[in-house]
Length: 468
Image (tube, rainbow, N blue to C red; front, side):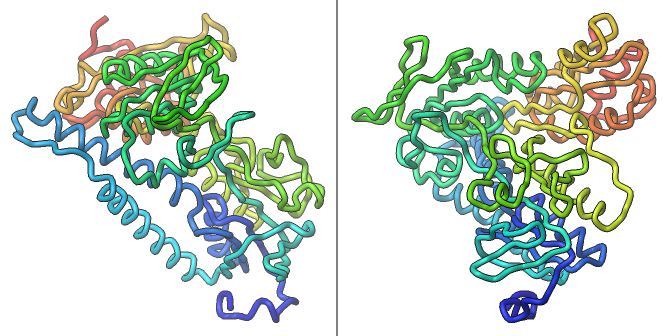
């Protein structure tokens, strides 16, 4: 029984929308479609909420919050608070993490259940341009939305065994705190685990083949993060490519192409995530693909008129909030509403390490590539001039990128809690605000949001709490 009906004996039922995948993109499309009066079938082989809720955003941020509390307990004496830090109870951390997930999961189940959506548990396969089959039952739709998400990737010749060589999925349920770890990959996932594990007392080394950590970010953000990680004792090998890994008596030995070897208890492979698309019938139905990704236009429409795709399955930013927005866009397009393509440069990006890295818009390098070196202006505001940042004992900066005499093209921030400031930064970029317009806004004192205001005051030619 699904949604109060025996779908298996109701083969003539045709849904307005059949959605394959119940992660951020899929469930957003389902909820918005139902809201717009559509008959919806939502198919998910695992748990509603997908990677973000169960193996990604939510559990990792819970681990990072536990790490933040551990650091505060260790350092509380510096602000006159007497505490004793006795270590990490990893089972207690998991209980806290799983409790957060459980509450959100139950809430999401209730939300989907209350909207009249036919929810189907099982592995679905695309069998025609308008149908998905699950366990021998065919679900016909006037339109199909593919939202099967992503999974951890590895490198050629590197076998993730879940024992000493693990993925982020394994790391989230690890029943112990390793004494040491090598993290292969210095992107968001690798950096966040490095940050949390260091706070838990792990000896961490990151190996990144590109010249900087979080290489997709503005170079100044990367350098600030690297400086902070050095100060915390997190080691990293930049511009160093992996060449092999082997078991030792105590753990694993990682070899690099430069001849260096690093030994540790665990190797975490964090080289990104790849689309889940193999064996699901996409190519057989004629959906255009590239390296496992489903190709779409700016409205998330595939080359097959009755099929759209959203989320990590398509080659856009692999962020839960991007999949969520894409799901809404498709639902509204299918309902006949006017929709605007997503400006992916305008999507906020946050790495929840200590310190955090948050950004929206163009990097300085990208802005100069598009507008020319002489047409781009930048300004850096040091958090040392911000009262609340000093109270929080965090350092970092806010960097603004502006087209000369024009709008702000990018906002790039490093510092604790900078992820909470990215909301205003996204409005500044997406509304094409001039520095002078932002400078007119009054920011509450003392807050970290003042730092954004001060940076724009300076860029507008009237710096106050800023040093030239």
